[in-house]
Length: 129
Image 1 (cartoon, rainbow, N blue to C red):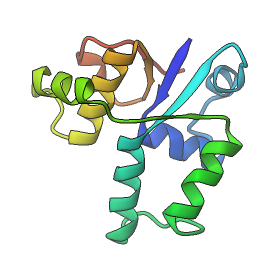
Image 2: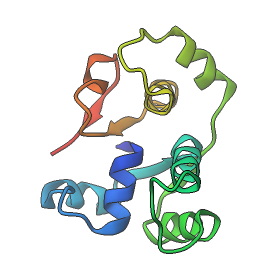
Image 3: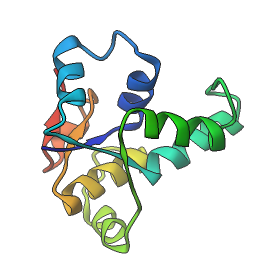
């Protein structure tokens, strides 16, 4: 299964947070699954860190590549196709980063790992345990 982590899911995974259930943790560490970390999440994290809303143990340009590699996530660039898909989505969710993650998941055939109930209203596969 191709799993694209929502920003909050990735941050919880990086922190070893109890928000990630043991069942979900098993799916995230199953070598049969491909895990992806979007440039959209990196952008959101950098913005929140720069605004002082998200403390990190080191600057984002050091922290993110290290944890993405440590957890075996493949980077997912933002394609023009995903941007165009973003424009076609209904305005269910006002967060542009969440909408972009939905668009990427649709375009790339990924299941989005997210606990956000608003995301389930889009025509995208969502995984949360």
